[in-house]
Image (cartoon, rainbow, N blue to C red; front, side, top):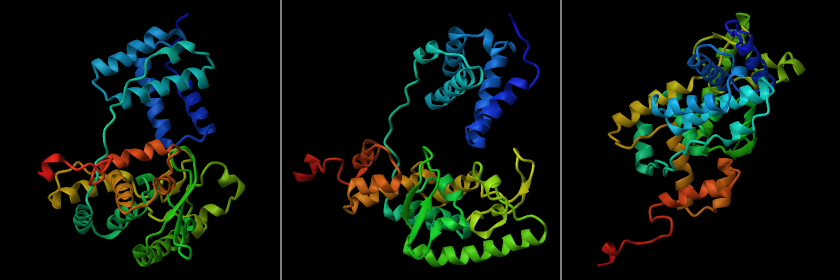
Length: 324
């Protein structure tokens, strides 16, 4: 039987299940967008009336007509898998049989130390501090932006990264050269927080159920973001007015402009500084297991990719041309 889905009930179920599983707001937005596109692609038919053929048709359409990247196609598949398994409660052996798009294996872009310095010289203020932190710690951009004040241990020169990729915690170093700049930055952030409190704001987003467990913690200094946004905004889930962290798009734009201004032709992004961090540590002779732990990789094979971009190549092989 063909069922109308014009009411938003199905997408509300999707959102409720995503929030129950503590998925990020970005995952929620991406999954609901893909599910809507899937439904509209088949003229608003209910997903219960669709099956393996329709899912495969949709994913093929994305690749052939939409010309989306393999990673994008796989994200769409993950959204549909979530819809059928988690929301509609359907066992889908046929969905597991749909071929996963092959993501091309590319070597990471790595900057030289001189190029890192040249880019940093083009940045200033908070942007300079954030990018310095990315290169100095190997953090991912969102890991840095989601840092709370309590996560920085100045005495031990450590940074605790909570809920990194795979919802894992890990510890990385706090570069000595960033201790003073970070302390000075936090003085300004604390003054901003105190202004917010005086105006009746000052509450910050609390992860998972901590907001209910510790109702007053959201206003505590320790829980505030290290890199707060310059403006207050409305939380799309709770409707509460809060000060979120700096948006990663702002850092992406700043790095893109700094790379151009530095005259560097490599396609460098904020994530490139994480690649450069790992490669430069290996060049300095640090053990690959140590680098693996600092990066938070589950498998050392993931870290091994950086051995292929060292100055002398993965196996330290010299070109025969250089020994003529």
